[in-house]
Image: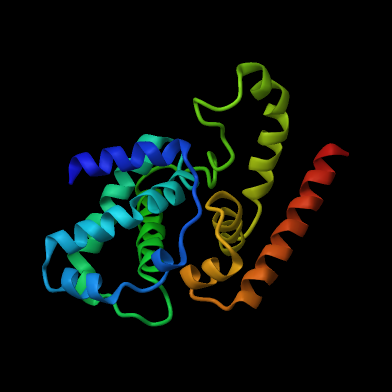
Length: 202
């Protein structure tokens, strides 16, 4: 399982892919088996969700190594508490996000504050050239700074919609909200970003 974690986490750094609806939705048979103590079933849940959890954490902490440590902690907590999981309109991934939020909060209490979404719009090592990064560096820094002024819910919607490439329906499933609420959060978030970025330019 260690090897699978390392491979999955590293591939998640540079690759952002859309999450199929069946992944965001409930997987009752696998969850039931995992709750019964089936380690193979839990490993399947791990493989299915580890990249999304890692990316979510990477946007909320400063260093990839911190995100890796927290991802390991999230799944350790999930394994220890999976018997408490109940389907209540939120997907298993949403439950993992809740554990991830709590893990970040716990670490912030123990250490100095970390920067929210500090790496959300960074560039992968195999991405644009050094010249292109220099050209776009100021805009990226401005966007990072602006996103940090959003509410936690707005940040999550922006990350899931535009970094994870989810549809509004998928985001609604993950966060346990209706599509109208997701669209409203997105609208307010984009409006806030536009004002922040406009004032930054001015």
